[in-house]
Length: 218
Image 1 (cartoon, one colour):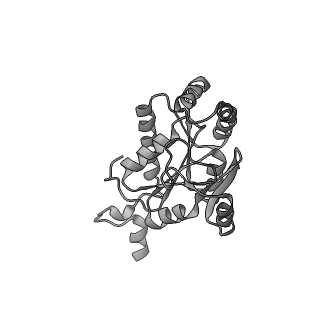
Image 2 (image 1 turned 90 degrees about the vertical axis):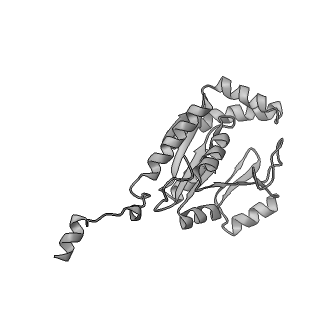
Image 3 (image 1 turned 135 degrees about the horizontal axis):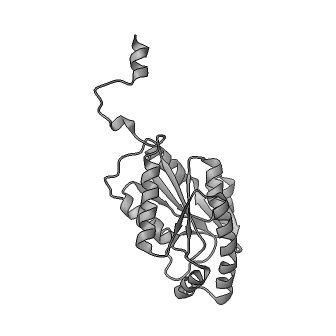
């Protein structure tokens, strides 16, 4: 995807989900960088930062009270409690994408993705799979950012997340090789951009009128 991608007739809501460690965030960030007309949805969370995570870049880190105030004001398009912490996606990103006719990319779990799909049926759901659970465990340990108990909880949750993703998502990518996985992600996005509901026909310069238009004038 290059910055010269044609404009959209309507906004594209793209959800990437995966078990932790499958590589969805790397793919999402790269897509935002390359697409030219994409915005990344930075989620809100009540959990503390991990490793080198930065506020307002990786997450908006807030306290529980602030999070619940945002719920009351309807500021989340979806939110949930996961592993004892709250996470939510800002509704403002959806509104911006639809108003500007650009692509919004959400890096969230399956529960959140399905919530967005229920509210916006035109949303596109993509699930990123690890090549194996053994490889997933290796990646989680390689991060060196979480205690053993947290790693075990994520591995246990990965099975459930994969099952839910397979049951409800539309596209699937196995991230064994990052370059190949990214190429598959680009192909999905290009196909979705070309759908009739998003294709900007106003770009066409035609010297003829569709048959229905001609008949309407006779």
